[in-house]
Image (cartoon, rainbow, N blue to C red; front, side, top):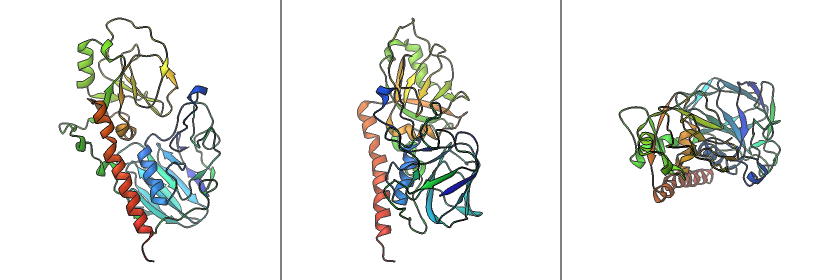
Length: 333
């Protein structure tokens, strides 16, 4: 069990998402950065989809009420246990009474706290994830607050399996730099995001299509877990288009009448009707999750084959962590 000592708005319990309920009008929810949560769970010996805490407002502070193990992944926040500085992407044992504090990150937008056995909250429609707008899932359907006490290890694969004394993984942004795809822009800090052209791409005039690719789009303050609204010179259709609503998944880039693109994310609605110009490839969704409000991204035109191939380095990265952790656990004590 853990007790929340200090938190700000929007920090929630999340797992990998709620699937198979879109026909009921229920979105996926789940973590914005699935790679970070998965790595944290691997380090602790949890199922990949065990629930953890997504922290996107800092500082965040808690007290352990029982002996357990935990990991902190995602954004490069400064994590301390009773004042002792912890390495990033690291699993550590904690004693009852010890206090963990996560400070504002040096880079990145969201940190993830995973606990041995996972966070024990009710499973609703197959997931423990919080959907704030619908007020269900997670811990009482809301963001965490000071004084909340969360149980761990119940109903997530049995008793907590404590991790090794001190062990970690190479952070994803170091192991999987954007340069691996040959799509970096060394002239500035603009983050390249690979996308596929979507159904209404050809409806936009050529000038608008070209501007979509060359613009450094700013993530505006009108952004949250539902979607990132981008700032830049508007994209306009040659003429108004009437569309039927269609299903939405994370990564769909819509263009509303304002002309400023919106990237749909974890808490997106299940359907929408704005023209869609592109879709973010699965391999770059975690990068997008770590892009801060106020930072800039640039879209990179990608083929279907390259989008599929882009997951290979991610899968290899996870497989290597699994292999090393398993070998470490089997070592003579």
